[in-house]
Image (cartoon, rainbow, N blue to C red; front, side, top):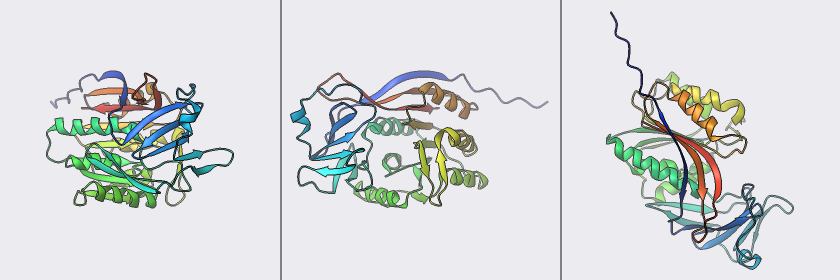
Length: 302
């Protein structure tokens, strides 16, 4: 008589706020009135922030000391109050990234709140005590999470639809001294790529997902998170290895909830024992108790 496979142990759940404020090259100075003022290395930048509902704590004069301001409305775009470089480097732990101001975006290439994820992922990799892991980073942008995994000796597959940001990520790879790290740089639609990997029977020990609310693939493929995320997660289930280490899912859309992310991760990992953390990525001024929630997330670890 065939023996039944043992059922995985029940999964534990924990809700947390993932915050940090101990990086020399970044600081949230203040937020409020749907804006935030931040220091990226040697420059101070003001940008619109829809989640910053509170009143600013600093005086208007302190906000006026910024080097650059980006507005999403009115005369949209960048305005410069000092002679600021368009490219400069930032150090986050033992990684170096290039910050960049471009005319078509308010982003500068780094989402600092995600350092809580990078540190958590590196800890999971270290605790696994496995000599080689395959990590897939989807919607991978300029490569911070990819480089964090590569720094721990992982083989990384980095997928983003924008070739320009992949080239930017390669700059970060060189700045971080990881030119020889085994990273595959893939410019592709994430859904198509994952389904193709499943047909190839390729497996991954960890998956990182940071999907936008809306986006387009390199061939004009339309991505809508409320329509396409569940299909993508179902496809990801087919490329998980027999002993996965972790899954990270981050959402910046205000229409979603951490309870939803918990349910999605529970379905995705129903064949494995482990624990789920859900919560919010937080930025916090060093000299204040105020907190700015930037996104919700769900993390599963074995």
